[in-house]
Image (cartoon, rainbow, N blue to C red; front, side, top):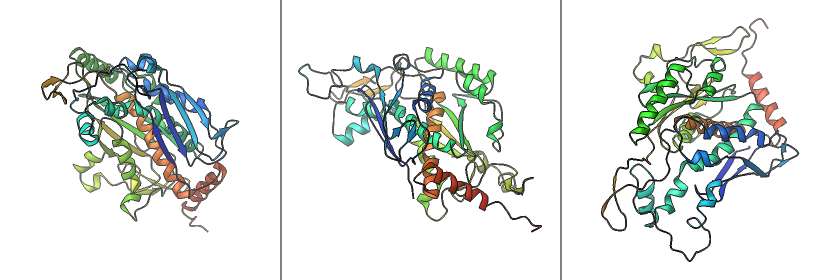
Length: 394
């Protein structure tokens, strides 16, 4: 059976980021044209900080692709950090003669203090460089490869911003058919929301937070449709695909919660208001009359669109810093400040797409295998044909 694996490397202000992806079958069309648009989308969004004006993220493919098609061997992607030229001494690989001032004032809400205590360091740059959300650039690059693989199987993945701070997007979208969602409006919105009125209210909230020297969290939603039935499994806890997907969403920096479909609203409802009734569509295929399960039952895809949400806390680096304690002097201090965004919810949706693509692509390969794209496509087609109900007239 095939399995998709990937590993990222690199620091926020180092020379660049690297990701190696293994398990992509041979024969899949792939080029930087498939990767760079998602890297640009990740950098966008109202509320981003100064780092986004420096970087122009572009991937370079260094292995695993020949003449525009994957070879079945590991794919290596490199993304240069343009800001590296300003950090050559602070982030030098080899020892340098000049002293480099340590970072000693941990930020509440960040990995700083826990990482310092875990690894036994009193220079927090040793922690914050890798714990930075800059690492998600490499994940988005890997996710673009997974997205291309899924697209070749007829699967689409999109995202939107549901909430920023107290402002919630207005439309109640039809989770049964994300293909009919107004995606052009989402991509045109500076905050990646559907409603123009909600978009403006979200931007006003970001402006107010920026003026106050603070930050905002939010909620993003990712939808995937076109998936075959039966990805994942009910037989063991770690094979339940909805659990694997929510773990991947919570792995995104600042995400502190995730739900499949309207899970928390479902918890306040009664059973007859929650469960998706079963029917046969006009072509004689299995379908549901709603999708409140978010595309999963028993840890497996059920043929309906997969819908997952991630809840972001306000990011922890703030222009008006919180109180902390200097790890060297033990004196009370204001937390360390380095360039910061005000709100990353629009970008987080793009990262959520990438993580969703990586989890779903891995599940497809786990279920269907395939050393080549053609083999995987044939196996998926057989499954789709097999779960169509028989014609009662025969």
